[in-house]
Length: 350
Image (tube, rainbow, N blue to C red; front, side):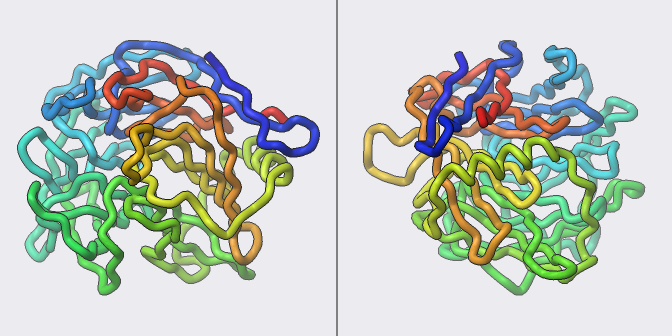
């Protein structure tokens, strides 16, 4: 059921998650959801709260047709709390995650042209983390990803986290981890957003949000103008609607505090965060609020749009941008155990 929430601005502006599909194949949490060739690829995840054994399914959702199918390809990795990135318009690279017994730092790749999974090989000289889960993996180019977040074995939680550049060679099916000199506070279940910085011409900055008891974003990388190849705008209508939505609200320098396992998608100058779990001792920890981080001015501002519909509480879900629309896929609901089979799109009622 869709929900409309007024943020209190003039004209009755609001937002809604509008259901567009429902399929039991999509009911999972702590999975990855990546757009590749006009389809959304869901890999692994947990099918029920409390499960320790991740799924090894790869499910492909066609948003144009509203249909989901299980991809029958051998070698699909058994993973949860992992990350994935589309590379070269052909490969879906799954990085790290929990396999049911340990945290990994390996790379498995789906060749979408051939429909087969491949286990890529770390080259000599690679310095991989001990293991990764609930981390982030951001595409910088078809040969570089930036990895940040929790690392170590199942009994390890470090005070600080390393940042890695993961270099890929799709032709050779190899990868190489290089540890960067900068570090972050220990984060788990955070999100990352690669955003343009102000200037003429603009550069880029990678920000980490959440995953620890802090409201402050943390910088995980800076790039001068021209270092990051900028893709053309893919959501001009959604960008315009987001700009109109935030103009109806009141911005703040303070973002959400102690939020984890939420979703985040970059839409032009905006980072759009939804849901997640608060790091509090309250009984009701799963959220359903929308946050928008607006970088068009300095300093950037946060806009918070709460939601009254408890049925939209989500944790371990994903949002994915395709065809000028933002899709919400999977996640556990209010009880933290039941996975949602719905796919929704974000409607901004301006």
